[in-house]
Image 1: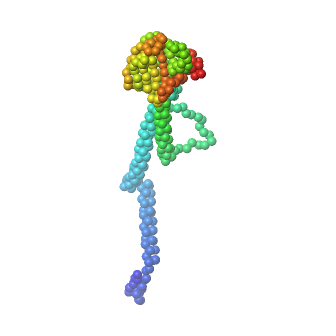
Image 2: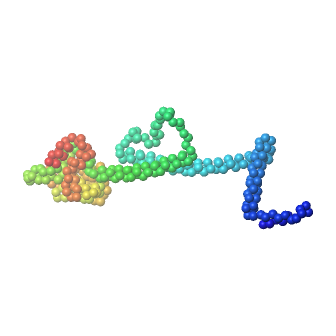
Image 3: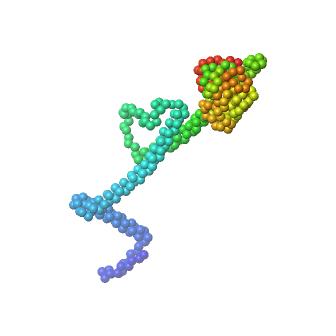
Length: 321
């Protein structure tokens, strides 16, 4: 670009040539001057507002401070809302953990007085002298809160798996015939080889005989389903209970049957009354335990629940021999 200057003061016209470089430098100088003037005006305005306390400028400054304070408050409120949501989730997880802990304590036999879930555990210690305490920043607090929430979820999942396993073991134990079917201090004839009272020959005795009075209540040694309830030529009035896992118990020589086939019975429920029906020499209860049809020594199951029962261990060992 060329600029021609013509004046009566000049003897001849003067020409000025402007290049791209000149234009860029001019624009830069103009912008710099504008920024400098703006900054100077802003500083001068704040200084005048401070020294002379001009109402208009003071109101502008207060409005700017209010806007900044409002933005900071909104930021803090958003973070508090997010942490409140996390806190609510952790409270729900703690409730689940308390319930899981109580159920696990029940399954494992821990008394509530020994393991109190609702109380805050005792913590303490002297204040550290080697390093000064430090305040947590908002980012550190949020990070630790997230980590704690994730760890609580993992603990809840692991405790849930443990509860399922303990519950399964408890169910299996309840399905084992470990409860005495009658109230009798000893058994008259144990499991194993003996002299048959009718033939006088050496014969295998596939159960144990408990001496009881006629009409004594007979209870299920474990929970299960009544597989058979009726009369048998050898056993007389007999009840067979299926406990699952190929395990069956038999209660023979009953005078009276109190259950029917297909009935679901619980552990300890009366299923009949003792007697002397079938191939029997007198009132007693013949009790058998069979696994996949093969007879098992009932004393081994009964000892699992009451190993200190008088005389039971000696007869169980003798029967095993």
